[in-house]
Image 1: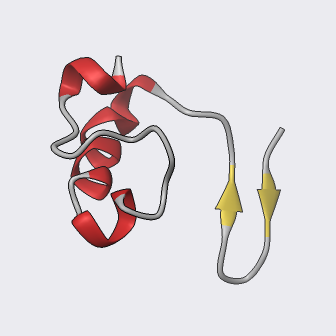
Image 2: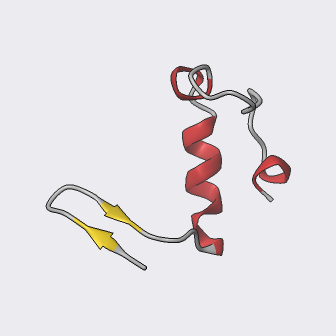
Length: 47
């Protein structure tokens, strides 16, 4: 299922999203607000 608006697209994860996920969660301002997300977030964490 895909849900779209003018500014946002929600869809299921794809394998090619993994690098973007790791990059985003390695931002301390993002990870500190998320319970259970380690900092530094690695490819192994994403897998």
